[in-house]
Image (cartoon, rainbow, N blue to C red):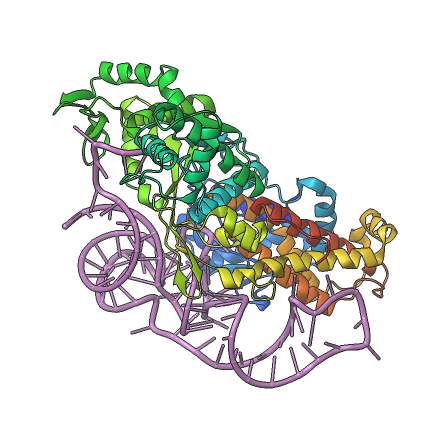
Length: 546
RNA sequence: GCCCCCGUAGCUCAGCUGGAUAGAGCGCCGGCCUUCUAAGCCGGAUGUCGGAGGUUCGAGUCCUCCCGGGGGCGCCA
C-alpha cells in the first residue's frame, strides 16, 4: 500500500492537530489539493483557513504557524512552504520527494492505486441492470451495466467486499404479455396490444416450438422464454466484461415463502389494510406521499410486494450496504421502497440509489427511438458490434450518471484523435513501445535501482507526470465513495496528456546523467501501470501495441 | 399541480461536497516528424457559470423564488 499523497495529507493533518491542541475539532477535514497555477507549488492546503475560526486567529497567522510545523514534520521532502491568498499554504516539494514517491509506488506492484483503509469498510451489494427477461439489453442497459460494474471494481480496489447481483423479473404481467406474444408468433396471429413486436420474439417462438411447446402452453412459454432471454442477456454481459455473482429470481421470492412470511410480518406490525378490494401498505407512515398496493383487487401481487421481500433478503444476505442502480423512470420508486423496509423495522439508510439518466444513441444528428415493446431500439450487442466494447464502455462511463448521455456513433466509430478512448490507449501503447525498445534487462535494472539516490534535477514534465500518478489512490477512493466512475475517465485522459508532454520533453532510452535513464524507465513503467489500472477499473483494455 | 435530473466556451461536458485569475476534449487559427509510435505535442481566440434575491471573510458549488430542457407521478415493471 503506497500512497505518497496520503502521507503528505497525514503530515498536514498532524501539523494542524498539534496546532489545534485541545481546541474544538473542526468540521471539514483539510483539503490537500492541486493548486490552480504551477507557481503556487506542488500541493496546497486550506488547513489554516479551516482552523482559524476555532483558534480565533486570522487565517494567515495560523498559516504561518502551520508552515513552521510542516517544515519540521516534512524535513527534506519539503523545499519551501508559502502562505498565499486568504490563507492557503502552498507546498513546494523537493526532487527527493518525487524520487522516493516513485520508488515506493514501484514497490506497490499490483496494489498500485489501492487507497488506505476505507472509512467504511462494509460490504456493498450492488444490484444493477435487472432488465426484464423479455427482450435483449438496450443501449441504456449498457450504461447501467458499465456503471454498476465499474463502481463495483472501484469499491473492490478500495477494499470493500462487493457482490454484483441481477434481479430477474421472471413472473408477473410483463412475462404474461411476453408469453402471449410468443404464442401469437407461433400461431401466426397479430401480436397483441401491449405485446412485444421485436423480431427476436419470432426466433424465440421457433426455438420453443422446436422444444415441443405449442401456443396454448402460455405458462411454459413465459417461463422458458424468460429463461432463454435471461441466458442471452448473460452472454451479452459477459461479452461486455460484466459478470454477476448472483442472479436472483422474482419467482423464487414467492416459491420460497419469503413473500408470505414478510406479508405476515407486515400485518403483525399493523401497517397493512384492505380497501376497495385490494391490500395496501400504509407507506405514508414512513414518508411516502401515498399508500401503496401490495395485492391487487384481482388477487395478483404487485411487483412492489415481491421487491420489498427481495430487498429484505438482500439486507440479510449482505450485512452491509445495498446499492440499487435504477433508471430515471424509476426514481419515484425510491421513497416507496425505503418506506417498505422501514415498515419492516429495517434501516432504510442502508439502501442507497444511483439514478441513471437516459442514453440517446445519435447518428447523423438523429436520435434513435427506444421502445422495447415495439421492438425499436439499438441493442447493446449491436452497439458493441459497431464500435467495440472499449469505446462503448468509455462513452457510457464518461459522463456523470445524473446527466443524459448522447452517444454519437459517428464519433465513437472514428479511430482518430477525436475519440478519447484511443487517446488514453495510445499513451499506454506508446509506453509499451519505449519499454520494448529499452529491453527487459534495462527495465529490470531500473526497477532494482536505488531511485532515491539518482542525481540531477527532476524535470517539470516528470514532476507533473509523477504527481498525477501519485493521485491514483485518491481518485480511486473518491470514485468508490461517490460512486462516480466518470472521474476515472477524466483521470485517465489527464494522465495520458501528462505522459505525452513528458514524452516530448524527456528522452528516456539513452538519457544522459547518472541513473536518469533508470529513473525515467521507472516513471514510464509506473505510468503504464497507472493507466492500465485505471482502465481496468473502467473495464477497458490496455493494448501493448496500436 | 407535485417529485427527480440538467442549464458552465461555437459543440459535448468536468469542476475533487464553500476557496486563489472557472477547466478539458472536440471544432477554429498558426507552428512541430533525420531522435524512444504525429492515434502525438506546442502556441492562440472564446465565458453576464440560465435569471433574481439570500447565507459569509469568500458562492459555479449551499438556501428561496422564477425561466428553459428532459424524465416521472398506475391496483405496469
